[in-house]
Amino acid sequence: MTTPTGPETPTGPRVPPPGPDATPEELIADIEATRAELGDTVEALSQKFDVKAQARNSLDDARQRAAAQARVAQARGTEVFHQAKDAATDGHGNLTPQARSIAIKVAASVAAVVVLRTVWTKVRG
Image 1 (cartoon, rainbow, N blue to C red):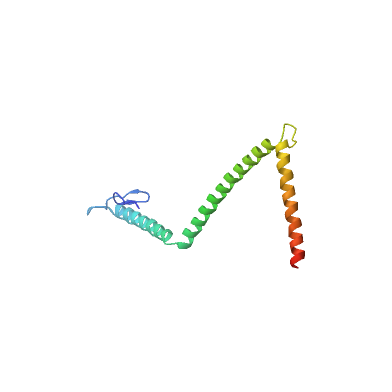
Image 2: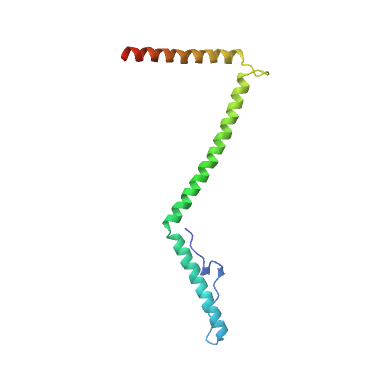
């Protein structure tokens, strides 16, 4: 938290009060300036103690940060996908022999898990 360097209003430095020989117009102007300063102070205090508004602002900030992080993650995921696709295919879009071998092994593993689960369910059931 910062400490103010001097008495200032939100609109600028404070004007010294009128002296004993001030005109009625100067007194009225000082009263109006004081009212405006008081209104600004009350507004600032009401905002500071408005817990619901602070919670809303914090929630909005968190949403914006999460959305930004999601966009970054999506862009990174797209980039990694394209790199993997480029590494697994040749110039014509066909799988490379190594990628084809890996795909066959994965498909065989998935088929084996399905068969084993089916057998296990029938044995236990």
